[in-house]
Length: 107
Image (tube, rainbow, N blue to C red):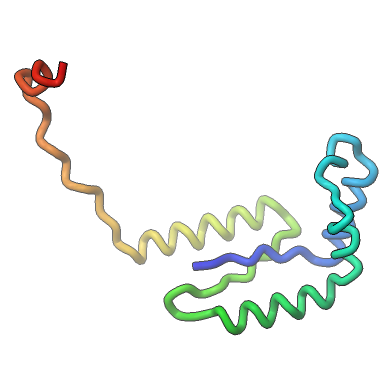
């Protein structure tokens, strides 16, 4: 399972603006971020190509809307929970407890 967290162009612009305007967020901003925003449409098209050629039944891609962090987190958590249920994992067998003699030997 692979998740692609997709921001809309408006949300990316908003987050970049916050990083420019707010000193507590400015440390996150790089020149690459600003240049990358100018090429948003081309990068989205490139990602679409990557996702289509690397998607498969064994490891599918899920495109997650990421404009709202709470919704992004809810969707990813739901996907993970579903995947863990599908795997039908079980707890390992509980080992026999240590005897007092075993504990003494470990000292």
